Image (tube, rainbow, N blue to C red; front, side, top):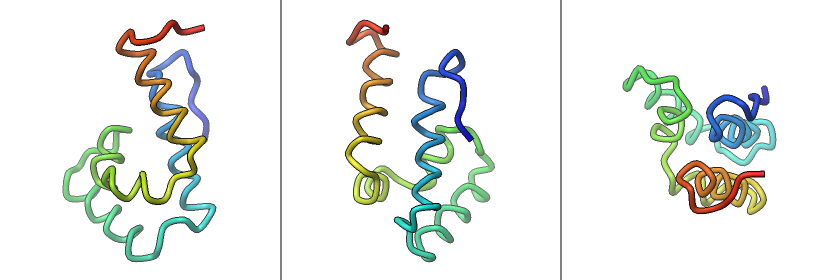
Length: 84
């Protein structure tokens, strides 16, 4: 489920966070807490998914390449780098 880079620049990296599920990087407890958090907030947007999972869990479980992609997209979005 890869989003087009023409939409929100952070959509693709956030969508790749969902690959954590496929790679068994999240425990059943982490997954349950994530789903409960999304349900409680009612926010299924990329920002809501990240909020429900929590940055600590994301940083602890995500591969470095994924985190670098998110940081690069954020830097481009806020004008800290030149998007190609």
